[in-house]
Length: 311
Image (cartoon, rainbow, N blue to C red; front, top):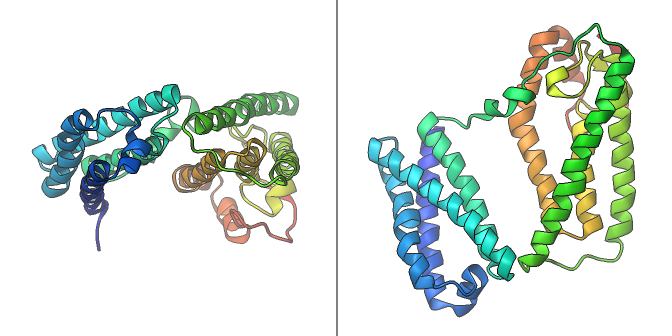
């Protein structure tokens, strides 16, 4: 059975092969060159990209965790991130090379993940909960009214950023990069309806959490009591479900597949990076009560029955 390090090396090998095929297509097909590089000088770009992307990826795959293999992995990942940023800037200014931005953006994310598993043997998801996002219980002496006000202040900030700022920016970039697709006319009213319902779920969940949990949904002021009431009777993470659904709804309203993808990516990050850390913290703080709750209430698929209780 392969370990993560082997998967990291396999990714760099795949990236080297993909890079070779891409550069072959660039020089053989004007359409590929135009779609991925725009008016950039392909010979000049290749002079840097072939050794720093293709050859460095191949070296990282072949040499693994040796000194030279680690250096090659750092070079490949660093170059890929730099190219993704530079190409995104170029595409935004010129409205060219949109497909190149998407390809290099995906490669940058993959390269950074592969670099982590190659050097560290894992992806350090625990970095997500450092600093202001570290898990800490709220001060229990504060009143429910204070926690309620803090919770709705959080909603304003988080919804303003993740729903009010990021989706319009992504939709704008999608247009500038020439990647927009036509949505059916029903997309906008459907998105509005879904957004209203998802927002109602989010508000309901936040109100129940702050009024019964003696805390807030924010990691730095988490509830002091396990809440299994309201929407938490049927699903363990209704606020996460609400947020992801809101993001997808914004994609429909803005008619942007990139925003819908942003919501899907957020769900994956939350499920595979944030949720395990959060549930480990809840298990440590609430013990058997949380384990019983986890066994009886699903994470994503709602239950149709269950009794309200707090522990």
